[in-house]
Image (tube, rainbow, N blue to C red):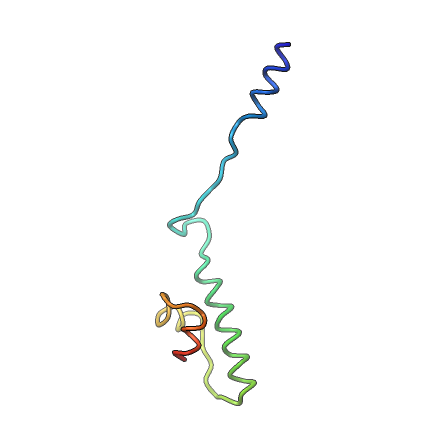
Length: 74
């Protein structure tokens, strides 16, 4: 009976979730802007435009915009 209580107690323990509010574990903005730069460069090449962008450039100029807003701005 004691073992069952211990087992039930262990099953009711809450799970631990890590929330990275200050980007110390993962830098998602950098990854997202790298993907955006790659996609924007593909679209520019497809339409014969000479411009090319880096993630750093997009991060500086478009950090608070959506991808759609960024494309409109470019």
